[in-house]
Length: 276
Image (cartoon, rainbow, N blue to C red; front, side, top):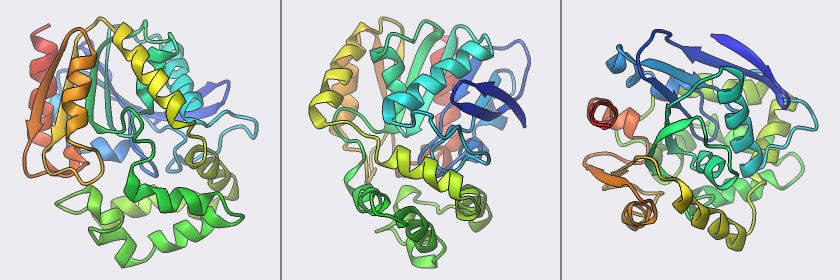
């Protein structure tokens, strides 16, 4: 893993290097670059970059005054692209959708293509199944209690809880990697709580979403037809919103398409990039 120091704090990242097309992968809440462990090896002729963003699964805390709201983390992502001087990036979002707001914020000049894959959109921040956890993080000590719940088999694997993210199921060693940093560090729990409670009003979210229409470069919307968290109608709404967008439906998958259907996901990304 490499690391870069940004104004908000240190960001660790995986970078496969090379001269191929640059693909930057963002991850979901309480996850890290391992979310992409099945997809990146299938894109060996691309330069794949996977930052670990401060969404609770990061291994080092951010500065205490860092803005870790939805917009704040989107700006951290934009700062990351600047710091690595990445251009004509294909930015891939899955689960967490806040990376879209680099467009709303006027920071998308380094993004040549956008891939939105079963992610938060419009006013679905956070998705309904995640709202109890967000409410818990608003309470003193709530983030620590949330992590204790994530240590139980039920919350980890039951489809009515965290297990509802992946139809195949996420291995415990991966979940341990995602959850351990915040379990051990009060500062990372602080970051987790700041992000989890840093979503603006529905009105603001919809205002930001309307600005996505300003993005005039190619967009690929990849959506799991059986997604339990991200409404299927958001896929077509996103396609209608952008000037140059196409839609790919993925069967036999829940939200984490890179977990459930990595081959199909990687093929869709490869075709998307190669046809532009």
